[in-house]
Amino acid sequence: MADYKLEKLSNRTPLEAARTPNLDNITSGGVLGLVNTIPKRFKPGSDVACLSVLGYDPEVYYTGRAPLESASLGINLGKQDWAVRCNLITINDDILEDFTAGHISDNEAKLIISILNENLGNSNISFYAGKSYRNIMVYNGDIMIEADCTPPHDIIGKSIRKYLPKGNGSEILIDLMKSSHHLLVNHDVNKVRIDLGENPANMIWLWGQGQRPSLVPFKELYGISGAVITGVDLLKGLATYLDWNIIDVPGATAYLDTDYDAKARYAIKALETHDLVLIHIEAPDEAGHEGNIHEKIRAIENIDKKIIGPVFDALKKYNEFRMLILPDHYTPISKKTHTSEPVPFTIYSTDSGKKSSLSFSESNAEQTGLRVKKGYKLMSHFIEGDIAR
Image (cartoon, rainbow, N blue to C red; front, top):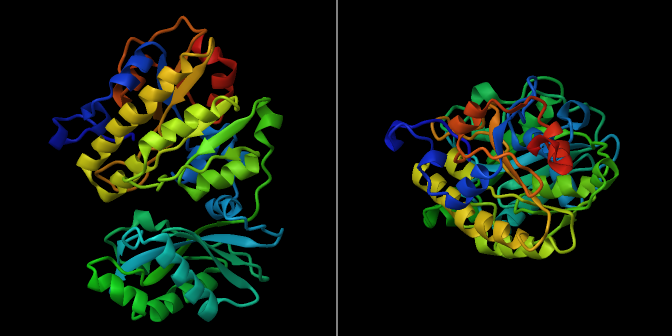
């Protein structure tokens, strides 16, 4: 949701341009500040940022993105296994045109993953279908997969040649990627997609690798129970390691067409049996990657109207409650990828006398002077309520 000021929006950010009466009302009656969710040595991504938001220091717990997503797919990684994120992508010549292969359907993705397993899988290599373009490859051979890999959403419109994996284990990854292109480029599933005017899934892109992390369960660390509502395997995987309940919501697509109303309804119900409920919405991030200002503003307004407003109203039946709202990282329209700036956050608490009297925006958050430099500490501040006193 966080972004830069844009000339097309009269030097406002999408967040400032969007109509967000509920978010602004909550922020005005709560505290507003900035939190650094991406530690200095880490690349900006949802894996690192969400670990921070959930109260886990990436310096201690982060091993890679793919191991987190693997948990949501029921993949039981052994100690020597390497999980690798496997995007289905669209390339034209050597240009990466679409890191989502046209947001390929789950069924088509499963078919392609089965093709990959049949032709490229062996005793050391297995492919697992996830959701849409987000899939997993697991390697359990003798080589350490420690290559430097580039996220595909960072190189949209660029030649892949300069961004192929480099370092230990890169030969395995590059061979699989190139072999997948030969296998998929003329496959029937892609011929049909092209005939329908859709981007073909004509190659895989391997990145985000890592080994099984050791995360302390959330209740053991913070003393309360949790649940998550999301359409993204990364968050579901994190919840699995944290021993949270994963609440499946029909229509949660992890895209612009997600069912916002359903997410709110299920969250309100979950609050009856859980101390803390995380609602994750991917839509503004996807709009940022697409460079689509209109869709980003629309997603922010949908979140405000259909999720933040109803959930806040439902919380009022409890004598005491707190609500934390924030993006996990920036995804600026102008860059179409993630950046590392501290993000704005607001905490509303019934036991706090502090009021920002400001609307929720990047510039207003900076203006307050409130900073949480180590992002993973925000969760304990939220639970204890000390930041809002």
